[in-house]
Length: 264
Image (cartoon, rainbow, N blue to C red; front, side, top):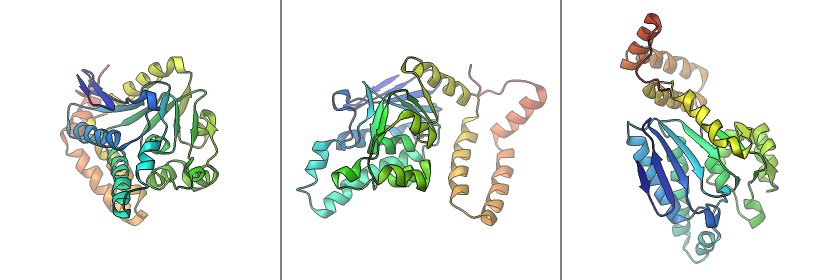
């Protein structure tokens, strides 16, 4: 099934794998108001669709995402402060929606990414980039801040690497992106599809409900202290044992059978 927007393309296969493509290749998939709104709409629908198990985020053309569109930036000059805050908040809401998507979000990073594009990578659960790609948190070169994306970038690469990359705005290559944790792995461009499919196959072995609950578990545990987490995790494990997936999974293990959610 294919859903066409003006700035993105959404394709879902029979396995429940949805591929969301940023589709402004002539602008290097730069973010503007239209793309942000359409991507948010798509993310909402994919989150609510139980038939969708995995979401792949990628870009059309040679770049993944060049960050904010300069025309979009320029339009802010004549806006009031309240309007600028609201426009900025649309990107913040999109990143939050992607970060909390109750399915694995796999970044098929087909090329270079800057600014907001790095933020989009940072909300993915698993990211595969290509050799020769370039990355940069370049906002300071324009006298701006990587504000909306910073919670996700810092969570992804840590405070030390955030300072190394954000304070100069200098570009870095895919190998460094992998070393600092922005990319999970780096492959040659001609095997990007095969590498992505391998990751998809791994995720198709996991129970969808357990995946959604585990993603929420990670977010909770990362933001609470040990004592609170002891109580929370004990409850969540007890809950999991009582779910249909938990019962089926344990029975399948004992009986050496294949649970219903596994797809070859």
